[in-house]
Length: 168
Image 1: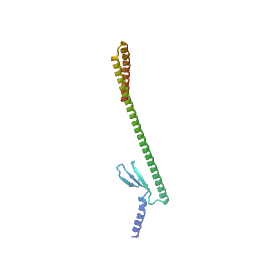
Image 2: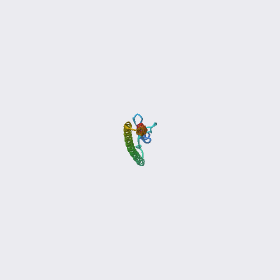
Image 3: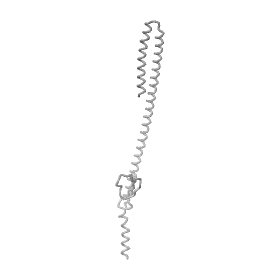
Image 4: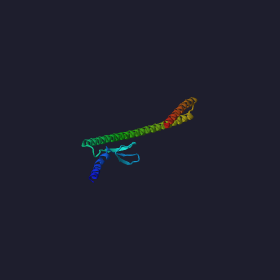
């Protein structure tokens, strides 16, 4: 009977050594399932961390704790860099949007100026046409006719410029 108790005691004593061979790995698979095993994941997964074996020495536990602290600090530094980068990207997008708004306003004001210049040229052409109709001499009509032709060229140029502005 003593032999059986001794064998059971030895088996019970040796079982934790066999059951806990190293670190305990904690990870989450692609489906979101959390795993706690004595082996690292075979497929790529989000590794949450590892824990020391209960049979590790105090030095190993301290080293493990320092490693975990260093990992947490590194992770926090990476997160902080990401936040800074995100903030930079946001400011850059906002600046680009403001620049687009400024360019749009400039384009709209150029179009408005082009329309105004075209209207002025057309009004001036009407004045010249009135002067042509009221001219008493042949010389007066020839003079106003030349000015009307110049004004027509100016109007065509203004219309072309306006079309270019509107097509941008």
